[in-house]
Length: 288
Image (tube, rainbow, N blue to C red; front, top):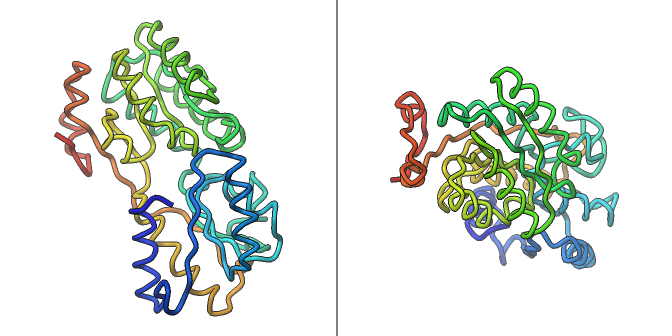
């Protein structure tokens, strides 16, 4: 977890009677998008024989699941837990894993619609994702992305990337298409590498939408997605219930309840965009 997210989680746990170092011991590992490190940390934490493990992202959850079928796991920032084989169904997970999803497939259509709204000149749109870390290899979002593109008279195309060099090449290719925009799909690789995406999009003058506020705060044009702090706040009650004897199999997988639209006006101006007043009035936050 990032420091801010970890703090939200710890504070929420403390309100439920669990204080780190007193009534509970919390061990934290952060592997970013490093697959090898993720698997190593999964083994390390399970050797510690924890009562419950909290995972963030699909790759992290998959790595821990590979190592245990008994230790309770509570995931967050996972889009497709059924497709990934983490749970049998959302209402009754059925195993040692439960948690909180962050996106439904239809969100890809929402991102594209917002991109068209902020820049009506967009007639082509690239979906940027890493097939190794995106839900269902990217197909989870892309089907809705294509459907929305047809409705909006936008030509969609995919831009799968697995490295900094491929991000650079993909965005350069987008820049050569007239009327092109960029939708950064939600996956852990794209989150870790968002700074490069933001910089390259700005360099080439490409309007881009992101799934999390952090990208907009870092200079991205705008974002729409769940309030990340709420995702981590939601996890605490499930951890509390498991520590008190509940089984993950009986705790339903839940969806986010709070979403936010964040617009960076400074970036919009640098792109020569006049953000529609209708969009600004709907924004939860405008960064000047």
